[in-house]
Image 1 (tube, rainbow, N blue to C red):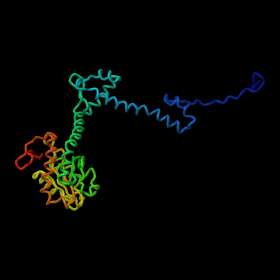
Image 2: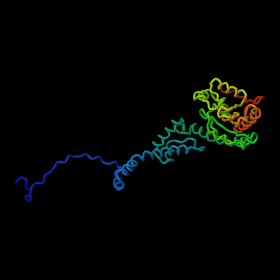
Image 3: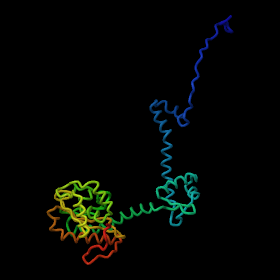
Image 4: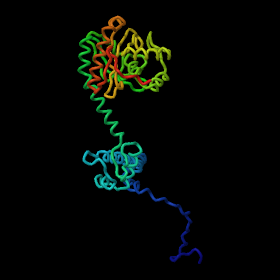
Length: 321
């Protein structure tokens, strides 16, 4: 009889269920389901994200680490190395080494030789010189700055040019100066300081143009805001061999600076004496300028500068104009 089963009952009703495609779980997520369930869905999602994306971050760090290991593999005894040699030393595949070397070549850190090997590029030399240069400059300058401070009883600075600003890399405070110099930070616009004008006076024209393009903004009663007057002031610095600033960067503050030259004759830094206008002004510049110029000359000699000077004491080197 229809509807009767083997035991005399009715046949079971079969309801068709539509097929659902189930995407297999990501291999890195699948094992986390059992671990993450007690912590809830939110914790599971966080762990799943970390499991999915963390390898790419780790690979990036590993690539940087291997690139630095490549650079450290070169030495005086082995100035050139090949891909196979580097791969063996690093314990990675040759394709990985080749990829890292190409990136280093593009950035100038390594150079490919005609025989297909690699050596360190000039960028490594330039970076190394920056480190040594900065350390040596401060080491050479410090005792001379101490003598200058003792001779003048004023605050003395050593500054370098960075973009449109001067960066004070050394400062020795005067014992008789009140804390008025707290308002002078490690950086100031180059156009308003004696150190900045000293550095710009012998800088390439495009550097000076960049400073002017930033703007000659008034910061104190006597700030130079005219482009023509500013260029005239730089010419005056070149003629007399030192720069002055009287209330150009800060009210009631004046300074006088002289250039420090490197072994190639280029101006690399400036030494300055700064103090309140009651002690540093037009009437005392005649006494302070020779002292700051002598200190700058001593630092220049310590940095390898050996150019002759004329009888008037001016450096016998022409400004880049």
